[in-house]
Length: 225
Image 1: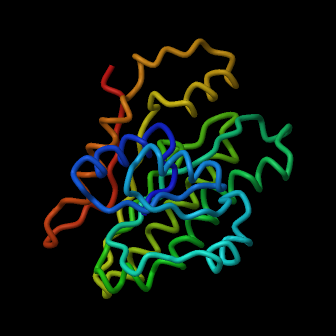
Image 2 (image 1 turned 180 degrees about the vertical axis):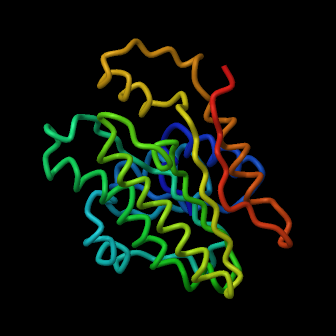
């Protein structure tokens, strides 16, 4: 089960898993996006629900068929809206907290029975901002700091059930989100300066494919340039 499979790191992970024959369930925010993902990844299932409105995810899922088995849940979707604390509105705070933190918690809650049954794996694609907060990054960093807390608590709670939990902290990665960040920062965007999404995908697959006798808890990936 993957969120954020439409672009960037999520798309890179989905391509790799699809190519090797894994069964995919791809989250989409609406029916139109679901149709696009189904065409992009033949044979994949889709699940529709708006991460920006976590209160309605239960209702949305009640009208769809959830997978009976989930071996891994990959939280990769995210949004960013930079700005100084003096300018950020409650709407901006709520949007980032909803998509980046509350919806991952809600999705995890829905799929915990399947994950426990499969002795599965939950991967949270966090950010360097989940470890350090800088000027103009307060709301995004707060959502990602919260995501680290969610992952750490889940790891302790579900260890006895055999569920593995990994947080991945990529540095700046070449993606549509990074292009938006540069636009907000007023900087020129040069994708060659940043991590290729395929490199982050490699680290995620490393965590997923690790033998059952070990678990990667936290993994930081930095640009090599």
